[in-house]
Length: 538
Image (tube, rainbow, N blue to C red; front, side):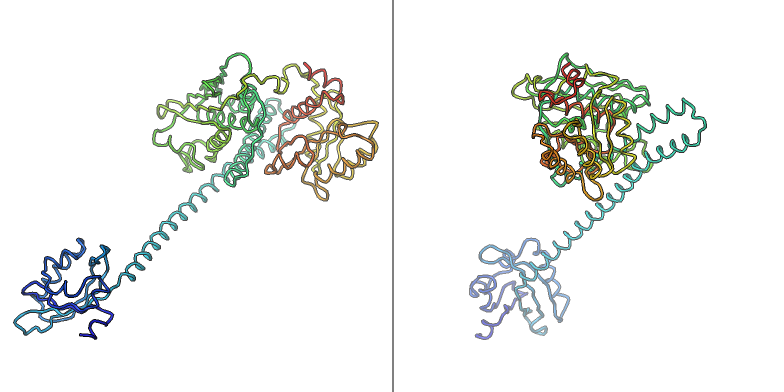
């Protein structure tokens, strides 16, 4: 008896004919918490009440099997209730004690295998988790492959148009005026399209890494919308779409990042242009609702399926991502809209009555506490000299790329500026050394990424030269950073001493407007060309 009570297992003897427990060893108290004497003589019904409900039927089937089987070892596992209420897994091995006896007795041993069962359950959970993770990874990998295929297609399509039109122009002698006009429009449209694709990809990367920063300053939403309309107008004209902008007279003033909100409106309008059939209509309305400014873009396009509407603003999501889809895109434009609007403390929503019934997108942005902010807004460009907006402005442009230098020089000279070009920092410093302090440029355009000394180093050298020439801090030449590294933050560029940034590729008109804005902000210091001061004063 002492050996049985100390063995690491529970020995039991069950009377099948009378349906009761005849004997249980003392180890049952350590395994199940019950006193052995309390279990001895326990009826079959009492025994079943201690078995887990899910295991009772299996136990009864097991015991009935002894009626037909005279001998043989049998094993099974079941859950038995511990005295504290928990369930313990028991592994049982038993056989008929004496098949020839008049009373059928089952002799068995039970071992607590709860730890093993727990380990098996945890292993199963790990296996299931691994399966889920593998499935998610495979799905993500498929999505990545699909996305890369879409990116490749979307980036190659504009390049194909550029290459094709370049070939046609190069092999047309003389160049047909009609062909030239079509080529210029197509090239501009595809360059703008590819630039937006690249910008959207970079901005998506910044958002996912938490590196997208906003610049908050007063702005006029009416001007933002008008500027965005001009961006998409070539694509809209190509489809003969009517664009109507409805708003109350006067400005709609808010605080925000002008470039990012411009991007929001451009993305919404581009989306409307893309999904609106030829000769359709796009209506933009701007106004206020309580303490919010609102912009609504409504189109007569293909509409949005109700099932897809909840996923409309998710990244890399498109209603049709097949290779036979009619409409292009990366599936990130609307996701960017949502993120940029939310970063401004606003909301964006979409509504559609269904396929073929158009769609409406509504952006709401918080109004500033002080509703009247126009005195802080940049001056309107309505009164600028149309033919020579930069008349009398002296500009030094630095870029190691000869094509970039030619484009900048040509665009600025057409705007009336005097342009001095340099291909390296040393050339620019030599040029300024000859001019200062008697002849002082009004603006520096510095490319940031160059072999040898980059734009940051060149600007530091310029500032040192200015000090040697006796120029004060207020007389320092305003510098604009020109860079294809769009991920460079505005904060870093401003801290380096630049007053503004232009991201490549840029529209020459945008470059002229940026230069005018920089000069207009300096006009009260008496160091601007007379033509610019007069035009900016309006």
